[in-house]
Image 1 (cartoon, rainbow, N blue to C red):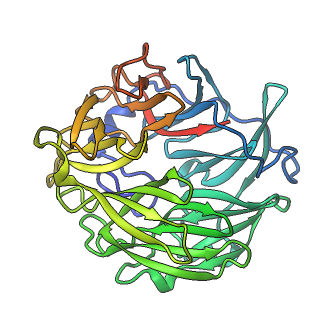
Image 2: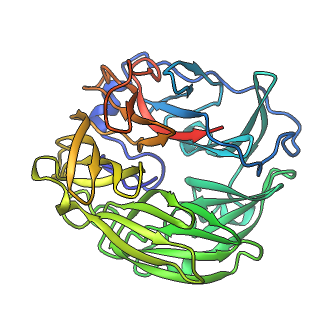
Length: 404
């Protein structure tokens, strides 16, 4: 699990004990179960077909159970039977939906599904640990997945010091890519996000030397997409990269650097240039660049253009307390101007998404019941578009992902 505002566990979602106890008393709406598991085999649809995103997939959670929804640009939504749990994220792989379930009590796995004739069909559910790893690592805790080719996937496993290479036809991990040499002072390298540029694969490493208050710089590792050999590494200028590497233009991405949630001022936004033989990094926004009235820890972002971004910003976390505030901002980095889109007193895991002329924001609502929670839409200028699309009774948006 990524480093979250709530107290952390070794694997799976960070949870606030008081919140979980309260939610246990609520009748939260769970996800519809996926179809029965088939004998196995590869998807009928392509893992690598390039198609423009046309909707946002939203995962709802109450930390106990989960839901999955498809949200269209006009704000209409429909429930998807993806088998989401209380700790699930979703990715699109060509024409296939990849569901990363990370709660071991509800079945930790990689689930592949595809839509056929308007129905969701389960392709396979894959255990992301090799038999030789199961005794040493209780959980895999998958954070990201990309397709290497028409039958092979690469999965970032947060709780295991190696990437998993998955043969989709066999529905199993067939080899691993060792990242342990790059962990530095951390117990594990903590791989988080994956991104591909041509014949190179990039993975961010959080390298948490201290889970609560990390100080070791993050790292970017470059791999050859054919051999998966490490061809370059880059120690990042800030601590704790969190969330997706978000494209700005071809070969250039941005990533949020949270640092420690207990410290406002040690994080920001990096721009990574992945066009050369070796990657380069530049800090383009620091926590301190934000206007004082909205300053905090940047732990999620979306890109509108070279200047404008949508930032998810949380207040400083003090010992024994939750965050003071969560804000989602439209931010102009050159003029250092901020417009607040959402402001709440509870945390949400979902980073914002920009799709076409619309910004999608996960609003966690207020209180233990998450009143008012849902997926909100805005123009690129920051004007609201209609009502929020709910993600389940007393649930909040946990993950958002643009998909075909």
